[in-house]
Amino acid sequence: MIYVYLVLSAALVPILNNFFDILKQSYSWWLVPVLFVGFFLGFVLLHAIWLLLSFAFVKLDSNQDKGAKYYRFVLKMTLPLVISLARVKINVSGVPLDSIPTDKKMFFVCNHQHDFDPAVIWSVFPDNEIGYIGKKEIYKTMPFIAKIMHKLYGLPIDRDNNREAVKTIIGAIKLLKEEKASVAIFPEGYTSKKCELLPFRNGAFKIALKAKTPIVVCVLNGTREIPKRMVWCGCEVDFCVVNVINPEEYENMNTNELGDMIYAQMQEALNNLKKG
Image (cartoon, rainbow, N blue to C red; front, top):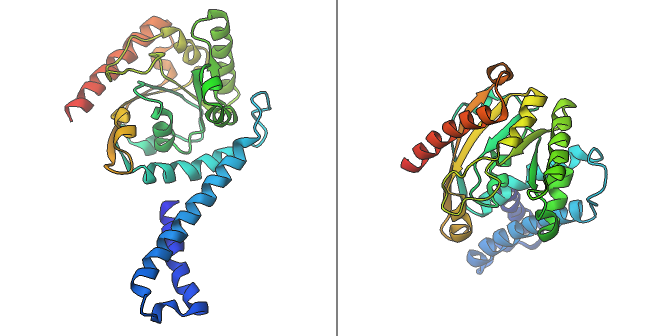
Protein backbone atom coordinates (compact mmCIF):
# COMPACT_ATOMS: atom_id res chain seq x y z
CA MET A 1 0.00 0.00 0.00
CA ILE A 2 2.87 2.40 0.63
CA TYR A 3 3.70 2.49 -3.08
CA VAL A 4 0.06 3.09 -3.96
CA TYR A 5 -0.09 6.03 -1.58
CA LEU A 6 3.22 7.40 -2.90
CA VAL A 7 1.97 7.26 -6.50
CA LEU A 8 -1.36 8.83 -5.55
CA SER A 9 0.40 11.58 -3.63
CA ALA A 10 2.62 12.35 -6.63
CA ALA A 11 -0.39 12.35 -8.96
CA LEU A 12 -2.39 14.74 -6.80
CA VAL A 13 0.23 17.51 -7.08
CA PRO A 14 -0.24 18.12 -10.84
CA ILE A 15 -3.99 17.61 -10.45
CA LEU A 16 -4.02 20.35 -7.83
CA ASN A 17 -1.96 22.49 -10.16
CA ASN A 18 -4.84 22.47 -12.68
CA PHE A 19 -6.91 24.39 -10.18
CA PHE A 20 -4.33 26.65 -8.52
CA ASP A 21 -1.41 26.81 -10.98
CA ILE A 22 1.06 26.15 -8.16
CA LEU A 23 3.90 24.76 -10.31
CA LYS A 24 4.48 28.10 -12.00
CA GLN A 25 4.87 30.08 -8.81
CA SER A 26 8.20 31.22 -7.41
CA TYR A 27 7.63 29.21 -4.24
CA SER A 28 6.98 25.93 -6.09
CA TRP A 29 10.39 24.54 -5.12
CA TRP A 30 9.28 24.11 -1.52
CA LEU A 31 5.50 23.85 -1.95
CA VAL A 32 5.62 20.79 -4.19
CA PRO A 33 7.49 18.50 -1.72
CA VAL A 34 5.37 19.84 1.15
CA LEU A 35 2.18 18.97 -0.73
CA PHE A 36 3.56 15.55 -1.67
CA VAL A 37 4.43 14.71 1.95
CA GLY A 38 1.13 16.16 3.15
CA PHE A 39 -0.91 14.02 0.74
CA PHE A 40 1.06 10.90 1.69
CA LEU A 41 0.58 11.48 5.42
CA GLY A 42 -3.10 12.12 4.76
CA PHE A 43 -3.48 8.75 3.05
CA VAL A 44 -1.66 7.02 5.93
CA LEU A 45 -3.93 8.77 8.44
CA LEU A 46 -7.05 7.72 6.55
CA HIS A 47 -5.75 4.16 6.44
CA ALA A 48 -5.17 4.23 10.21
CA ILE A 49 -8.71 5.51 10.77
CA TRP A 50 -10.06 2.72 8.55
CA LEU A 51 -8.15 0.14 10.61
CA LEU A 52 -9.33 1.57 13.92
CA LEU A 53 -12.97 1.80 12.86
CA SER A 54 -12.88 -1.73 11.43
CA PHE A 55 -11.89 -3.30 14.74
CA ALA A 56 -13.02 -0.75 17.32
CA PHE A 57 -16.48 -2.22 17.77
CA VAL A 58 -15.50 -5.89 17.66
CA LYS A 59 -16.67 -7.86 20.69
CA LEU A 60 -14.51 -10.69 21.93
CA ASP A 61 -17.53 -12.95 22.32
CA SER A 62 -18.77 -12.30 18.78
CA ASN A 63 -19.00 -14.92 16.04
CA GLN A 64 -15.56 -15.31 14.47
CA ASP A 65 -17.06 -16.39 11.14
CA LYS A 66 -18.94 -13.13 10.63
CA GLY A 67 -16.95 -10.77 8.42
CA ALA A 68 -13.84 -12.98 8.48
CA LYS A 69 -12.92 -12.22 4.86
CA TYR A 70 -13.29 -8.48 5.38
CA TYR A 71 -11.08 -8.42 8.48
CA ARG A 72 -8.40 -10.47 6.77
CA PHE A 73 -8.52 -8.04 3.85
CA VAL A 74 -7.99 -5.12 6.24
CA LEU A 75 -4.96 -6.81 7.78
CA LYS A 76 -3.56 -7.81 4.39
CA MET A 77 -3.73 -4.17 3.27
CA THR A 78 -2.34 -2.80 6.55
CA LEU A 79 0.63 -4.98 7.47
CA PRO A 80 2.81 -4.21 4.43
CA LEU A 81 2.22 -0.50 5.09
CA VAL A 82 3.23 -0.84 8.75
CA ILE A 83 6.29 -2.93 7.89
CA SER A 84 7.40 -0.39 5.27
CA LEU A 85 6.83 2.65 7.49
CA ALA A 86 8.78 0.97 10.30
CA ARG A 87 11.57 0.33 7.78
CA VAL A 88 11.69 -3.36 8.57
CA LYS A 89 13.18 -5.59 5.90
CA ILE A 90 12.29 -9.27 6.10
CA ASN A 91 14.85 -11.62 4.56
CA VAL A 92 13.14 -14.92 3.73
CA SER A 93 15.08 -18.14 3.14
CA GLY A 94 14.59 -21.89 3.27
CA VAL A 95 11.67 -23.71 1.66
CA PRO A 96 10.32 -21.62 -1.27
CA LEU A 97 7.12 -19.80 -0.31
CA ASP A 98 5.41 -20.71 -3.56
CA SER A 99 5.65 -24.38 -2.60
CA ILE A 100 3.43 -23.84 0.44
CA PRO A 101 -0.22 -24.06 -0.62
CA THR A 102 -2.64 -21.30 0.37
CA ASP A 103 -5.77 -23.37 -0.27
CA LYS A 104 -5.02 -25.83 2.52
CA LYS A 105 -5.06 -25.11 6.24
CA MET A 106 -1.75 -25.83 7.96
CA PHE A 107 -0.11 -25.83 11.37
CA PHE A 108 2.63 -23.18 11.69
CA VAL A 109 5.34 -23.47 14.33
CA CYS A 110 7.87 -20.71 15.06
CA ASN A 111 10.23 -19.50 17.77
CA HIS A 112 9.26 -16.40 19.74
CA GLN A 113 11.54 -13.40 20.31
CA HIS A 114 9.17 -10.42 20.47
CA ASP A 115 5.54 -9.30 20.28
CA PHE A 116 6.23 -8.29 16.66
CA ASP A 117 6.67 -11.95 15.65
CA PRO A 118 3.02 -12.55 14.61
CA ALA A 119 3.12 -9.48 12.33
CA VAL A 120 6.26 -10.80 10.64
CA ILE A 121 4.74 -14.25 10.09
CA TRP A 122 1.51 -12.74 8.76
CA SER A 123 3.60 -10.64 6.37
CA VAL A 124 5.50 -13.67 5.07
CA PHE A 125 2.28 -15.72 4.66
CA PRO A 126 -0.40 -13.11 3.81
CA ASP A 127 -2.69 -15.58 2.02
CA ASN A 128 -2.57 -18.52 4.43
CA GLU A 129 -5.33 -17.24 6.74
CA ILE A 130 -3.40 -17.80 9.95
CA GLY A 131 -4.99 -17.62 13.37
CA TYR A 132 -2.74 -17.50 16.45
CA ILE A 133 -2.88 -19.18 19.79
CA GLY A 134 -1.83 -16.39 22.15
CA LYS A 135 -1.48 -15.99 25.88
CA LYS A 136 -4.72 -14.92 27.57
CA GLU A 137 -2.99 -11.86 29.06
CA ILE A 138 -3.08 -10.23 25.62
CA TYR A 139 -6.84 -10.04 25.87
CA LYS A 140 -6.51 -7.89 28.98
CA THR A 141 -3.40 -5.80 28.37
CA MET A 142 -3.77 -5.21 24.60
CA PRO A 143 -7.52 -5.13 23.91
CA PHE A 144 -7.23 -3.76 20.36
CA ILE A 145 -4.72 -6.45 19.37
CA ALA A 146 -7.04 -8.98 21.01
CA LYS A 147 -9.90 -7.82 18.78
CA ILE A 148 -7.74 -8.27 15.69
CA MET A 149 -6.70 -11.75 16.84
CA HIS A 150 -10.30 -12.71 17.59
CA LYS A 151 -11.53 -11.79 14.11
CA LEU A 152 -8.66 -13.72 12.56
CA TYR A 153 -9.64 -16.89 14.43
CA GLY A 154 -7.12 -16.36 17.19
CA LEU A 155 -7.51 -18.35 20.41
CA PRO A 156 -6.41 -17.35 23.93
CA ILE A 157 -4.63 -19.94 26.05
CA ASP A 158 -4.26 -20.06 29.81
CA ARG A 159 -0.74 -21.35 30.42
CA ASP A 160 -1.39 -21.85 34.12
CA ASN A 161 -4.64 -23.82 33.80
CA ASN A 162 -4.29 -27.18 32.08
CA ARG A 163 -8.03 -27.70 31.76
CA GLU A 164 -8.52 -24.38 29.98
CA ALA A 165 -5.46 -25.01 27.84
CA VAL A 166 -6.98 -28.29 26.66
CA LYS A 167 -10.12 -26.40 25.59
CA THR A 168 -7.96 -24.08 23.47
CA ILE A 169 -6.19 -27.05 21.88
CA ILE A 170 -9.54 -28.64 21.06
CA GLY A 171 -10.69 -25.36 19.53
CA ALA A 172 -7.56 -25.20 17.36
CA ILE A 173 -8.07 -28.79 16.18
CA LYS A 174 -11.63 -27.90 15.23
CA LEU A 175 -10.48 -24.86 13.22
CA LEU A 176 -8.08 -27.02 11.21
CA LYS A 177 -10.48 -29.89 10.65
CA GLU A 178 -13.24 -27.54 9.52
CA GLU A 179 -10.66 -25.66 7.38
CA LYS A 180 -11.68 -22.29 8.78
CA ALA A 181 -8.11 -21.15 9.41
CA SER A 182 -4.54 -22.27 9.65
CA VAL A 183 -3.20 -22.27 13.20
CA ALA A 184 0.13 -20.87 14.40
CA ILE A 185 1.81 -21.45 17.75
CA PHE A 186 4.97 -20.46 19.58
CA PRO A 187 5.74 -23.76 21.35
CA GLU A 188 8.21 -22.10 23.75
CA GLY A 189 5.25 -20.44 25.49
CA TYR A 190 7.23 -17.28 26.26
CA THR A 191 9.33 -14.76 24.38
CA SER A 192 13.05 -15.43 24.53
CA LYS A 193 14.76 -12.30 25.83
CA LYS A 194 18.17 -13.62 24.85
CA CYS A 195 16.87 -14.83 21.47
CA GLU A 196 17.78 -18.40 22.29
CA LEU A 197 15.42 -21.28 21.63
CA LEU A 198 13.63 -22.09 24.89
CA PRO A 199 12.31 -25.55 25.84
CA PHE A 200 9.05 -26.51 24.12
CA ARG A 201 5.67 -27.21 25.64
CA ASN A 202 5.15 -30.32 23.57
CA GLY A 203 1.47 -30.68 24.44
CA ALA A 204 0.67 -28.11 21.77
CA PHE A 205 1.71 -30.58 19.08
CA LYS A 206 -1.39 -32.60 19.86
CA ILE A 207 -3.13 -30.11 17.56
CA ALA A 208 -1.21 -31.40 14.55
CA LEU A 209 -1.49 -35.05 15.59
CA LYS A 210 -5.27 -34.83 15.92
CA ALA A 211 -5.91 -32.57 12.92
CA LYS A 212 -3.49 -34.53 10.70
CA THR A 213 -2.36 -31.43 8.89
CA PRO A 214 1.01 -30.40 7.40
CA ILE A 215 3.34 -28.64 9.83
CA VAL A 216 5.24 -25.59 8.56
CA VAL A 217 8.38 -25.20 10.70
CA CYS A 218 9.82 -21.67 10.80
CA VAL A 219 12.43 -19.68 12.69
CA LEU A 220 13.06 -15.96 12.85
CA ASN A 221 15.75 -13.74 14.28
CA GLY A 222 16.02 -9.99 14.82
CA THR A 223 12.53 -8.90 15.87
CA ARG A 224 13.77 -7.69 19.26
CA GLU A 225 15.64 -4.95 17.41
CA ILE A 226 12.50 -3.54 15.77
CA PRO A 227 11.41 -1.19 18.63
CA LYS A 228 14.97 0.13 18.98
CA ARG A 229 15.73 0.74 15.32
CA MET A 230 12.47 1.13 13.42
CA VAL A 231 11.73 4.30 11.42
CA TRP A 232 15.04 6.09 12.10
CA CYS A 233 17.62 3.38 11.56
CA GLY A 234 15.57 0.57 10.11
CA CYS A 235 16.34 -3.07 10.78
CA GLU A 236 16.40 -6.47 9.15
CA VAL A 237 14.61 -9.59 10.31
CA ASP A 238 15.79 -13.00 9.10
CA PHE A 239 13.04 -15.52 8.52
CA CYS A 240 13.61 -19.12 7.49
CA VAL A 241 10.99 -21.66 6.44
CA VAL A 242 12.82 -24.68 7.80
CA ASN A 243 10.62 -27.55 6.70
CA VAL A 244 7.12 -28.69 5.80
CA ILE A 245 6.31 -31.95 7.58
CA ASN A 246 3.45 -33.94 6.07
CA PRO A 247 1.11 -35.96 8.34
CA GLU A 248 2.40 -39.33 7.14
CA GLU A 249 5.87 -38.36 8.36
CA TYR A 250 4.79 -38.01 12.00
CA GLU A 251 1.63 -40.14 12.28
CA ASN A 252 3.37 -42.76 14.46
CA MET A 253 4.97 -40.21 16.80
CA ASN A 254 3.73 -38.95 20.14
CA THR A 255 3.79 -35.27 21.13
CA ASN A 256 7.22 -35.48 22.76
CA GLU A 257 8.83 -37.22 19.81
CA LEU A 258 7.33 -34.74 17.38
CA GLY A 259 8.31 -31.78 19.56
CA ASP A 260 11.89 -33.03 19.93
CA MET A 261 12.25 -33.52 16.17
CA ILE A 262 10.96 -30.02 15.42
CA TYR A 263 13.08 -28.50 18.19
CA ALA A 264 16.25 -29.99 16.67
CA GLN A 265 15.36 -28.64 13.22
CA MET A 266 14.58 -25.17 14.56
CA GLN A 267 17.71 -25.04 16.70
CA GLU A 268 19.95 -25.82 13.75
CA ALA A 269 18.18 -23.28 11.53
CA LEU A 270 18.31 -20.57 14.20
CA ASN A 271 22.04 -21.13 14.68
CA ASN A 272 22.52 -20.72 10.94
CA LEU A 273 20.53 -17.46 10.91
CA LYS A 274 22.64 -16.04 13.71
CA LYS A 275 25.82 -16.95 11.86
CA GLY A 276 24.50 -15.01 8.86
